[in-house]
Structures are given as structure tokens and as C-alpha cells.
Length: 445
Image (cartoon, rainbow, N blue to C red):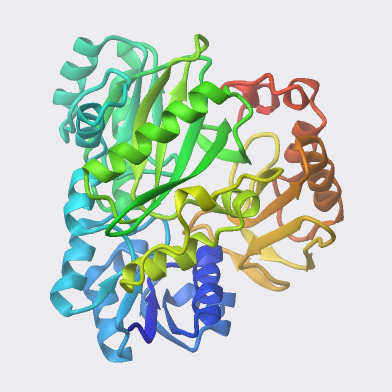
């Protein structure tokens, strides 16, 4: 039986885990960098311990520092959140060796899926159709050879990646060397892993993903999410259920992801991501072996607390839901309020002055922010996730628009104006969009 959970992360997800643990009667300890010593997660956790300076490599990406924090606080479990080391097989193995429960998939599964390029082969063997791509590589020479063989345009992706880090579209050979260098730098900074791989770039696609939870005996899929609205390959707005998916495709893909999860022995929460082309063909692109940033939209339409399910599975209690229990009710939308210029996407870190979140029927806000707190340039620019739920998509959009109009964030520029423009766009309202949709709202930096 678990008693204390060390949270090796920051921001809204750290606070989200604190909330879930408190409801389950578990004590919490937040492992934080020096810059995050006054964060909301630190304030509300039972304990907190500083694990290093601002640089992620010396704090949130340092396995020795994290394990030391667990040891000195007596934590018997560790939740890695998302990003940083959340998909690290090395961290899961180190926890196992230290007798600490890792709240995530097994080291074996993390090894299988942690290499995103290798995961494609695993999923193809399990019956999923994949986008043509390559194996992982480190050197630029190997990247050039593989790109030439694959054919342009290509998408560079970080082997240990997620969240748009290390992602670059390259349409011609002359742009490849520079893009490989930038992607490699981002991959090292975000994940501590320089390896990259390539996929054939699919133009005018939709990005659809399925949420899965699994224990020792069964896997359950909790429906799909629309993650098509992206800027520079980072998700901006998500919906559940997906707008651009037929009921036939939804049923088929749902069955396939459950089958794939069972075949690889998946445990805990995970997401299977697909690109759906203009002909309706769905191609598997990656599996994220962790909780996702956009998990709240699934929680809103299913009523299932995904973080609690993660903890229950890790504790050996098993899932609290069966497939027959899962009912998708209504529609939910999540808008990521980032500290960025709304037109250019340029980061806008700084001190938040006034900060007021909206309320009212069907509205949820996940945030670490408060008045007089800093949005540091060292980390992700996410300030808050505003989630709206309605009986249908129209009501969810209306509630989201009302919520964003009521929200107050002073002192830094945010993406709220961008979201309000999108929520009023005729093509968005009609569900007519692909991954290139937000380019019309983007001005050159």
C-alpha cells in the first residue's frame, strides 16, 4: 500500500498530481528546482525538496537528484508527470532497484516505446498502419543519408520526444543540415537524448489520438481526442471526442489500440497517436507512455480521473473501470493559455500581475499560476489549461469563449486573443481544419 508519492515535475501537472493524491489519502512531496521553490505545487504538497538549479539537466532531468529526494523524504512511489523523464526507462529501472514504485509503464514497455522510431515497428507488428519512416540516428551524416532514401518532405522528430520538442519539417535537402542541428539541440535540452528519427511528412492531415489505461489483466480505451490545431507542431487547442473521425474509424481504431496495448503488455496510462489523411486513412505515429497535457478533455467527457487510475494501477489495485463502463458524454475543449505573443508565437516570459480564472457551469482550469508569480524562460510557456464541457460541441465552444473573455492574466502576453479568434472562425466552427489551419493566424517573427 502506497503512503507517500514523490512528484518529479513542475507546473500544472505537479499540482494536478498533488490533488489526486490528496483525494486518495496519500502524502506528497514535490521535487523542484530552485526557481520553482514558491510554486503552487510546492505550497500545497505535504513536503518539498529542492533538487537543483534552474537548468533542467541539473534538476528535473537528473535521476540521481530525484532518487536522492525520494530517499531522504521516505517516498515509496514516484510520479514523473509529463515531459522531462516521464518516459525514461532508466528512471523506471532506477526506481525499481531502489524499491520505489514508478507510477507509469514498466521499464520493458518504456524501452519498447521510449525509442519512438522502434515503437513504430512494434505497433506495425501489432496491426497498426504506420507512416513511412526511419530508425533512430545521432550523427547528421546518417540523417542526410536516411532523408535522401526516404524522400522529401520529411519530418524530423526526437527519439525520446513529445510536446513538439525537436520537431522540424524539412521540404528540401538544402534545409536539412540546419534543421537537424536545431532539432538535436532541442532534443538534448528537453529529454537529455540527442537521437532523432525521420518520418515522411503528411500534408493536410488531422492529428487524432486515443487514451488508454491498462492494468495487469485488461486494457480500456477512453475515447479519442482531436489534436489537429497546432502551431509549430505544438498543440494549442484539443477536443474530445475528435471532430474529424467517422464512427466506423473510431470503433476500428479503438479496438486496434486496445489490442496493441495488450500485446505489448502495457500498464498504466498511455496515448496512441495517429495522422488521418484526406482520404480518411489513419497512420500510427507514436505512443506516449505517460499522462498527456490534454488529458482533462477525456476526463470531462468520461468522468474518469486518469491520474487516480495511474496511481491505482501502480499500487496494484487495478483499474476502477471496465470498457463497458466507459460512456462519452457531451463534448470538451481545452485551450492552452501560453505566455506567448498571440500572433507570432514568440515566448513572453515575465512576472504575472493580476491573475483571475473563470468559473461557471462546465468550466475547469488547471494552472500553477497566481498573482505575482514568474513565468520562467527556462521552461515551457504554459500558464494554464482552460477546459470547457458542454452537452454538444456548440455549447462547449460557447462556454470556452465566455471563460476566456472572463479570464485575467496581466503582466505577460498570452494566447487568449488567438484562441478567441479561432473560436469565432467559420471553418473551425464547421470542423473544417487540418494541421496547417493555424498558419493563417501566424505572423512571421
